Image 1 (cartoon, rainbow, N blue to C red):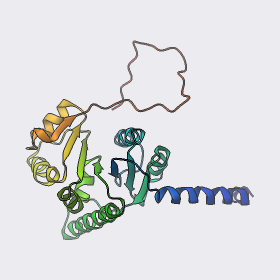
Image 2 (tube, rainbow, N blue to C red):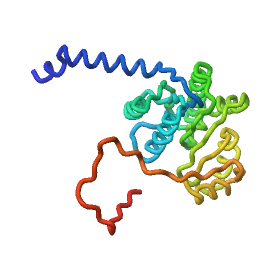
Image 3 (spheres, rainbow, N blue to C red):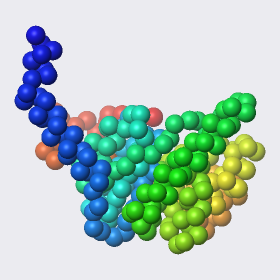
Image 4 (tube, helix red, strand yellow):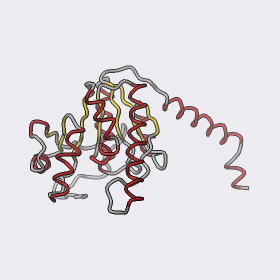
Length: 238
Protein backbone atom coordinates (compact mmCIF):
# COMPACT_ATOMS: atom_id res chain seq x y z
CA UNK A 1 0.00 0.00 0.00
CA UNK A 2 2.84 2.38 0.81
CA UNK A 3 4.38 1.71 -2.61
CA UNK A 4 1.06 2.37 -4.34
CA UNK A 5 0.60 5.57 -2.37
CA UNK A 6 4.05 6.83 -3.35
CA UNK A 7 3.26 6.11 -7.00
CA UNK A 8 -0.08 7.91 -7.02
CA UNK A 9 -1.39 10.37 -9.60
CA UNK A 10 -0.09 13.45 -7.80
CA UNK A 11 3.40 11.99 -7.41
CA UNK A 12 3.45 10.87 -11.06
CA UNK A 13 2.41 14.36 -12.16
CA UNK A 14 5.11 15.95 -10.02
CA UNK A 15 7.64 13.58 -11.55
CA UNK A 16 6.60 14.54 -15.08
CA UNK A 17 6.87 18.23 -14.22
CA UNK A 18 10.37 17.73 -12.82
CA UNK A 19 11.35 15.74 -15.90
CA UNK A 20 10.03 18.44 -18.23
CA UNK A 21 11.83 21.14 -16.27
CA UNK A 22 15.09 19.22 -16.43
CA UNK A 23 14.77 18.60 -20.16
CA UNK A 24 14.13 22.29 -20.74
CA UNK A 25 17.21 23.14 -18.68
CA UNK A 26 19.25 20.70 -20.75
CA UNK A 27 18.23 22.54 -23.92
CA UNK A 28 18.64 26.00 -22.39
CA UNK A 29 20.52 28.49 -24.52
CA UNK A 30 21.26 31.44 -22.30
CA UNK A 31 22.25 34.80 -23.66
CA UNK A 32 25.40 36.19 -22.18
CA UNK A 33 29.07 36.79 -22.63
CA UNK A 34 31.43 35.09 -22.36
CA UNK A 35 29.97 31.75 -23.43
CA UNK A 36 31.58 29.04 -21.34
CA UNK A 37 31.50 25.27 -21.72
CA UNK A 38 32.57 23.49 -18.53
CA UNK A 39 33.90 19.91 -18.79
CA UNK A 40 32.32 18.36 -15.69
CA UNK A 41 31.98 14.77 -16.85
CA UNK A 42 34.26 13.31 -14.17
CA UNK A 43 32.07 14.69 -11.36
CA UNK A 44 29.35 12.84 -9.48
CA UNK A 45 29.32 13.72 -5.77
CA UNK A 46 29.84 17.27 -4.52
CA UNK A 47 33.07 17.57 -2.55
CA UNK A 48 36.03 19.98 -2.75
CA UNK A 49 36.76 19.98 -6.49
CA UNK A 50 33.09 20.05 -7.37
CA UNK A 51 32.25 22.80 -4.88
CA UNK A 52 35.01 25.07 -6.15
CA UNK A 53 34.00 24.38 -9.76
CA UNK A 54 30.41 25.32 -8.97
CA UNK A 55 31.60 28.45 -7.16
CA UNK A 56 33.48 29.49 -10.29
CA UNK A 57 30.51 28.79 -12.55
CA UNK A 58 28.22 30.66 -10.16
CA UNK A 59 30.52 33.70 -10.26
CA UNK A 60 30.49 33.58 -14.04
CA UNK A 61 26.69 33.45 -14.14
CA UNK A 62 26.43 36.29 -11.62
CA UNK A 63 28.57 38.45 -13.91
CA UNK A 64 26.51 37.82 -17.03
CA UNK A 65 28.21 34.80 -18.56
CA UNK A 66 26.37 32.00 -20.34
CA UNK A 67 27.43 28.62 -18.94
CA UNK A 68 26.86 25.10 -20.24
CA UNK A 69 28.10 22.01 -18.36
CA UNK A 70 29.03 18.72 -19.99
CA UNK A 71 28.24 15.98 -17.45
CA UNK A 72 28.40 12.20 -17.44
CA UNK A 73 25.42 9.93 -18.03
CA UNK A 74 26.05 7.51 -15.16
CA UNK A 75 25.93 9.59 -11.95
CA UNK A 76 25.62 13.34 -12.39
CA UNK A 77 22.27 14.17 -10.77
CA UNK A 78 23.88 16.17 -7.95
CA UNK A 79 25.94 18.20 -10.41
CA UNK A 80 22.96 18.80 -12.69
CA UNK A 81 20.81 19.96 -9.75
CA UNK A 82 23.39 22.55 -8.79
CA UNK A 83 24.05 23.62 -12.37
CA UNK A 84 20.35 24.23 -12.88
CA UNK A 85 20.18 26.22 -9.63
CA UNK A 86 22.88 28.48 -11.07
CA UNK A 87 20.90 28.96 -14.26
CA UNK A 88 23.36 26.96 -16.35
CA UNK A 89 22.47 24.59 -19.15
CA UNK A 90 23.86 21.08 -19.39
CA UNK A 91 24.36 18.19 -21.77
CA UNK A 92 25.61 14.61 -21.53
CA UNK A 93 29.13 13.54 -22.42
CA UNK A 94 30.69 10.09 -22.69
CA UNK A 95 33.22 9.81 -19.82
CA UNK A 96 33.15 6.04 -19.34
CA UNK A 97 36.63 4.50 -19.03
CA UNK A 98 39.82 5.26 -17.13
CA UNK A 99 42.36 6.89 -19.42
CA UNK A 100 45.50 6.83 -17.25
CA UNK A 101 46.05 3.31 -15.97
CA UNK A 102 48.32 0.37 -16.43
CA UNK A 103 46.94 -2.43 -18.54
CA UNK A 104 47.14 -4.38 -21.72
CA UNK A 105 46.08 -3.60 -25.23
CA UNK A 106 42.38 -3.90 -24.41
CA UNK A 107 42.66 -1.33 -21.61
CA UNK A 108 44.54 1.09 -23.85
CA UNK A 109 41.99 0.66 -26.63
CA UNK A 110 39.17 1.46 -24.20
CA UNK A 111 41.05 4.59 -23.12
CA UNK A 112 41.52 5.66 -26.74
CA UNK A 113 37.84 5.05 -27.45
CA UNK A 114 36.87 7.13 -24.43
CA UNK A 115 39.03 10.02 -25.62
CA UNK A 116 37.51 9.80 -29.10
CA UNK A 117 33.88 9.63 -27.91
CA UNK A 118 34.23 12.23 -25.15
CA UNK A 119 36.10 14.63 -27.41
CA UNK A 120 33.56 14.14 -30.17
CA UNK A 121 30.79 15.10 -27.76
CA UNK A 122 32.59 18.33 -26.83
CA UNK A 123 33.09 19.12 -30.51
CA UNK A 124 29.40 18.57 -31.24
CA UNK A 125 28.40 20.80 -28.33
CA UNK A 126 30.89 23.47 -29.36
CA UNK A 127 29.48 23.59 -32.90
CA UNK A 128 26.00 24.18 -31.44
CA UNK A 129 26.92 26.49 -28.60
CA UNK A 130 29.89 28.43 -30.08
CA UNK A 131 31.78 28.93 -26.80
CA UNK A 132 34.31 31.69 -26.30
CA UNK A 133 35.92 29.75 -23.42
CA UNK A 134 36.20 26.15 -22.25
CA UNK A 135 36.70 25.55 -18.53
CA UNK A 136 38.58 22.38 -17.55
CA UNK A 137 38.44 21.81 -13.76
CA UNK A 138 41.01 18.99 -13.65
CA UNK A 139 43.63 17.58 -15.97
CA UNK A 140 41.99 14.23 -16.78
CA UNK A 141 39.07 16.12 -18.34
CA UNK A 142 41.59 17.91 -20.56
CA UNK A 143 43.11 14.61 -21.68
CA UNK A 144 39.69 13.08 -22.40
CA UNK A 145 38.87 16.03 -24.66
CA UNK A 146 42.36 16.48 -26.10
CA UNK A 147 41.60 16.41 -29.87
CA UNK A 148 38.76 18.92 -29.59
CA UNK A 149 40.65 21.21 -27.20
CA UNK A 150 43.51 21.42 -29.68
CA UNK A 151 41.05 22.26 -32.45
CA UNK A 152 39.23 24.86 -30.35
CA UNK A 153 42.48 26.56 -29.37
CA UNK A 154 43.48 26.67 -33.04
CA UNK A 155 40.31 28.61 -33.90
CA UNK A 156 40.71 31.10 -31.05
CA UNK A 157 38.75 29.58 -28.15
CA UNK A 158 40.43 30.13 -24.77
CA UNK A 159 40.87 27.01 -22.65
CA UNK A 160 41.19 27.62 -18.90
CA UNK A 161 42.57 24.81 -16.76
CA UNK A 162 42.07 24.95 -13.00
CA UNK A 163 44.76 23.43 -10.79
CA UNK A 164 43.61 22.54 -7.28
CA UNK A 165 46.47 20.15 -6.45
CA UNK A 166 50.16 20.27 -7.19
CA UNK A 167 51.24 17.83 -9.94
CA UNK A 168 53.18 14.79 -8.80
CA UNK A 169 56.87 15.34 -9.40
CA UNK A 170 57.79 12.07 -11.08
CA UNK A 171 59.42 11.80 -14.52
CA UNK A 172 56.17 10.43 -15.95
CA UNK A 173 54.04 13.27 -14.57
CA UNK A 174 56.53 15.94 -15.62
CA UNK A 175 56.34 14.65 -19.18
CA UNK A 176 52.56 14.34 -18.96
CA UNK A 177 52.01 17.93 -17.86
CA UNK A 178 54.59 19.49 -20.17
CA UNK A 179 53.91 17.59 -23.40
CA UNK A 180 50.31 16.32 -23.06
CA UNK A 181 48.35 18.69 -20.81
CA UNK A 182 50.00 22.08 -21.40
CA UNK A 183 49.39 22.19 -25.19
CA UNK A 184 45.65 21.74 -24.51
CA UNK A 185 45.34 24.73 -22.17
CA UNK A 186 45.64 28.46 -22.85
CA UNK A 187 46.06 29.44 -19.21
CA UNK A 188 46.33 27.56 -15.93
CA UNK A 189 44.76 28.97 -12.77
CA UNK A 190 46.39 27.56 -9.62
CA UNK A 191 44.85 27.83 -6.16
CA UNK A 192 48.16 28.72 -4.46
CA UNK A 193 51.70 29.80 -5.22
CA UNK A 194 52.90 26.38 -4.05
CA UNK A 195 50.71 24.69 -6.68
CA UNK A 196 51.82 27.16 -9.35
CA UNK A 197 55.50 26.59 -8.56
CA UNK A 198 55.04 22.81 -8.73
CA UNK A 199 53.39 23.16 -12.14
CA UNK A 200 56.22 25.38 -13.38
CA UNK A 201 58.73 22.73 -12.33
CA UNK A 202 57.14 20.30 -14.78
CA UNK A 203 58.23 22.56 -17.63
CA UNK A 204 55.01 24.53 -18.13
CA UNK A 205 55.82 28.17 -18.90
CA UNK A 206 55.23 30.45 -15.89
CA UNK A 207 53.66 32.92 -18.34
CA UNK A 208 50.72 30.48 -18.68
CA UNK A 209 50.13 30.25 -14.91
CA UNK A 210 48.09 32.57 -12.71
CA UNK A 211 47.31 32.22 -9.00
CA UNK A 212 43.76 32.78 -7.70
CA UNK A 213 43.30 31.46 -4.14
CA UNK A 214 40.24 29.42 -3.23
CA UNK A 215 37.26 31.16 -1.70
CA UNK A 216 34.87 29.97 0.97
CA UNK A 217 31.72 28.44 -0.57
CA UNK A 218 28.77 30.80 -0.89
CA UNK A 219 26.28 30.29 1.94
CA UNK A 220 22.66 29.66 0.97
CA UNK A 221 20.30 32.55 1.67
CA UNK A 222 18.70 32.43 5.10
CA UNK A 223 21.48 30.48 6.81
CA UNK A 224 22.07 31.74 10.34
CA UNK A 225 24.68 30.88 12.94
CA UNK A 226 23.59 28.65 15.81
CA UNK A 227 25.28 29.23 19.12
CA UNK A 228 28.17 31.43 20.11
CA UNK A 229 31.41 31.47 18.13
CA UNK A 230 34.59 30.21 19.74
CA UNK A 231 37.56 32.20 18.34
CA UNK A 232 39.95 29.56 19.70
CA UNK A 233 38.33 26.68 17.82
CA UNK A 234 39.73 25.72 14.43
CA UNK A 235 38.18 23.00 12.27
CA UNK A 236 40.41 21.51 9.61
CA UNK A 237 38.99 19.33 6.84
CA UNK A 238 41.42 17.86 4.34
